[in-house]
Image 1: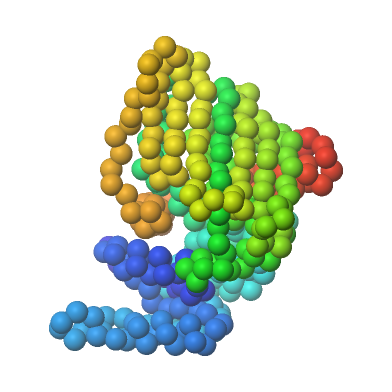
Image 2: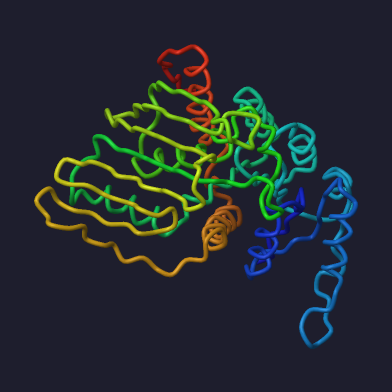
Length: 349
């Protein structure tokens, strides 16, 4: 099979993960990079041209670089544009990928407004370009195990849940993307979007309505609201109480996702693991065995493997842009609910 050739667009924090993950995949290669910051661009190009290993080989010495996707796509044969860019103002990148006939794999969220995301999806569909969004948390071993646990029926159908995520996210750290510091709703657009996607994926359900409140504590470093509290109704009558914050005032992360089912519970107590279940009269939680996991990398590897397999076979890509819109509609509804102090019904397209 010919390697799937990627143009990496944006060379910030997330691109470092993708460069390593793609390099580790035997059927993938990065053939081009696009980055408006000349320092970042030259650093990556120089690193690619440096000898690798003791044999003096330079396998990536011919990597093509430029400040814009359009100019890089004109210089190199490629298959996929991987957008590791902020969600704001992706119109040029989506347009360039569509014009060049490149499939698109975009870091979440696809855009920073529902209207923009819908426009991107429509543009890709009209151009006949496959569009996927990098919802890598679906590929966590704990997510896959939780989904199997709930679908196999051993503890019955889920009916209600509590999802709590409490984090002190220091957005000034160089290893993290800094653009959320100035977003209007950074928690919702950058973190809750993962959680809402996980709910939809694990429960195999869609959002119906939400009542939400967003706010910012006095010590928050974020310009926009870093806190979200929501009551979410999903199809099949599943009710979820959600609390998320990037301004939790302790450096230790708090994570708990407890799902109440007809005959017992499923309980995840860590973002990357610690999954268990119990029937109503069990004296303690029964642990679900999980493999060793390298956070951020193994889940990206799982997403990439699924993407490449489907792309190579000509099948619909995972985490499609249109599927992603359902999670974005829940984000948008949370914002409107908080602004209007009202319950918002969520329409399905």
